[in-house]
Image (cartoon, rainbow, N blue to C red; front, side):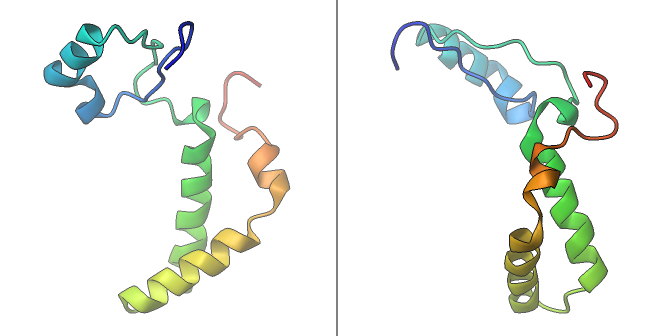
Length: 92
């Protein structure tokens, strides 16, 4: 990576494990501080929730149906949902 880049990841336990932190430190990665449990700051988390709700309403009965429903529902999510801040976001 070029100089000046900042590595960003959430506070998932595998990212905050001592071994991971040590590896990042040894490789001289600058890591962005990130609040714990902050899905509002990560837009993809809001999309995963949207997809989860849509799929749950369809009640897939097997893995094949689950995969098909996921693909269909993902394609149906309008761009306005992607661009809009989540209702619970304190930054908006």
